Image (cartoon, rainbow, N blue to C red; front, side, top):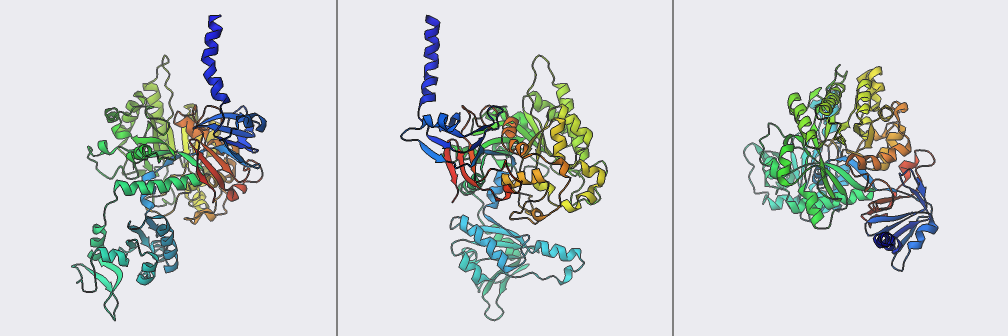
Length: 591
């Protein structure tokens, strides 16, 4: 009798917990669980930050209590919260305060873009941006007519009316600048201020009043006057970026990060940590209870051995901020046979790359310590090298008595050779693929690569069939030169993944391309959903706590306005995120 009584005593708390009223119930919908059993349900119940029941309406509604919030889905689709497995969050934070101007060549579009930033940036914080007329000047230069190109000068009165509470400093493509009245006031510049040496202030030819234009050293001096972004300002931007991610259903990211304490002890030959986020941004948001995305942090490979000194080891952290992966920047189009058009890529290892011998040795050493590795890699020769380094690592660190659960990655993997994909699949590697990159110039890819190499470019179907696990990632916020904006809306990226053509979206022109690039390499919609949910959870060793909808998992959910699993892929373009639930709480509701 003792054992049954003990068993009952152990089980009793679980039974009580299961029977307790839920805090939130979503019912009368289609719950795509991303689980084998059951793949589809009608309802899901949440208590605290966990999913407690998934099933039919009748089953789940038994957990409704007097304080339970219920949402009638009216047939809408529920998916696990989306997980963007490759972001540059601090870059997005910096861009939050900036106006993207490289494609702007009219006062009207400048005012429109500026108004968007004014609406989100708190009063008193500087708004910057550049380089207006850059695309237009470049196109004129390509036609051999750069000498007759004349850009416009912003209207100071119009911009002052739009920005009465923000200092504004904008840069033109030719390194002339424009400052609004608030910025001129803070710099104590007036019509009486003499021009500086090697520079001048733009003045009205009749009255001598300042126009806001700054040339040469006058603009440089104004830039130096701006205050550096403080941690508090960074956190303002961080909360704004989080809200933007939540609005498209994103509840987790894998971010490229650095630790400033360690970074400040280094002496670097170049700006190797450009685009690495300060991990303290996430830790500070977590302390304040303001973190609304889970973060899997990739730290730099080059100082992996110093991480234990600050308490970071593989798998350390918690369900909000977790560590265990390392990132290294690889190539810039390193190909066995050069591209016919380099598209601005140098065709070699990137300036941030540490050197082949050093990287190969670091991968082996970090793997031995239990870390997973991810490398930015795009050219076929560079991919071949990396797959070889991973193979060497597995051989060097292999121990049949203690099998290592590795989750190494190929990040981006634009132009792989078929043989290397087979090797990568045999090693169960992960590929972070970026549909937006494929659509940068789809009409030219065939000509740039040649017909044979184009067949395996962005070869997602081949990757899946060969055994790689795919994550769809955005590379948020986009290239460092702001030539385009990353498409971070998962539904648009899924559309590109399943159709292999562009999705119209703000910020880029390439999304409007009607070119279908090798449709035989498309994913299914089910695979695309997995690539935004369970696959990235697996990639960070978190598939047991998130990435699907099952009892005991974290309550990160997204409610879509339509069922994208049925009907044509064009549904993905029109479907919206009605609700985003993070950690059991509503963090986004459609306006």
